[in-house]
Amino acid sequence: MIPERSRVAVLKTLIDACIKQEFSATPIISAITKSYDCTSAELIFKTLHLTPADLTPPPKPEGPSGKPKRDPFQLHGSLFAQSILSLPIDIASPLVESILAQSQDTLVALCKNSQASHVIQKLLNSPAATVPNRRRLLNALKGRFVELSLDTVASHIVDACWDSPMNYRQSIAEALLHAEPQMRESYSGRAVWRNWSMDKFKTRKQQWFQLAKEEAAAAAAPDGKPIERKKTAIELARERHAAQKKMGFATGANSNSGNKRSAVAATDMEEVDGKKKRRMV
Image 1 (tube, helix red, strand yellow):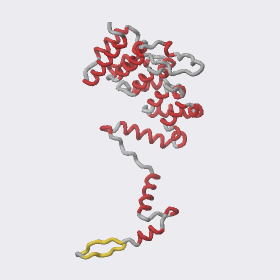
Image 2 (cartoon, rainbow, N blue to C red):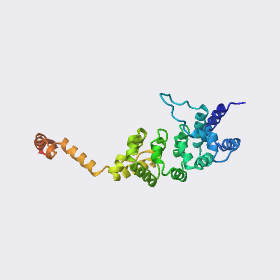
Image 3 (cartoon, rainbow, N blue to C red):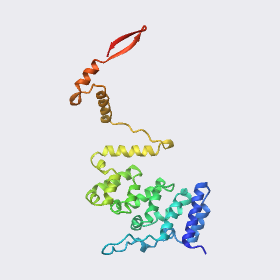
Image 4 (cartoon, one colour):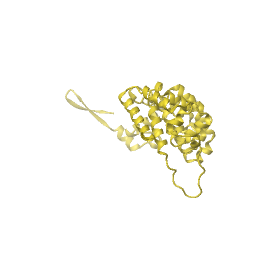
């Protein structure tokens, strides 16, 4: 009999091969779903080899302690689930529906789990991340984004939520802004604050919205080529000033009188009827 870990590894290899060769993995997913013989909500736990008890973090031991050992079954289960979510949505839907069927507390606990969190991130950035599914997930996590940001593991979920519809992105940013003291006191919170450009959202909100729109437009650009960002008025003015200064026509405190005199005295030679003529600039 094939050990469970080896069986999961073989199934993952089969799914990866189907993706690479563009074969339908529907029979494999159907067989896997039937073999687990569980409800839709239980499928994610069966796939990850998790139990509800695993989502409750153990009490921190007193004194120095190393990192907790990873369960190899849960690690392989996480990689297996991520491969499933790389399939087209119509094939990966059983696992997607299982994740979205969880209560908010269970979903938050999955986000904080070191193995399950990678599956949630994959759901946000995969073929299964259709607009309706993304909105369902964001709605399920509503009101908990600050809590997730303050968690070392779950903070990566908040980073992955950046590529969301603008109304959801703004709602998350406002929640983070209201918790600024907590965010700045936490290492992971500061990382999320920086990745979300929250200083810009706080003081230059118009630029924050422009940045978000430009990134969304670049992601949607054909052939993956980014769209050139439109320069602001102040950037154009600085470029003009730099060009004038380079040619010796800078004004104000940055002007250079010697450069200005040399520019006025500059001459240019041009050919007229086979003879050189001096032309004052």
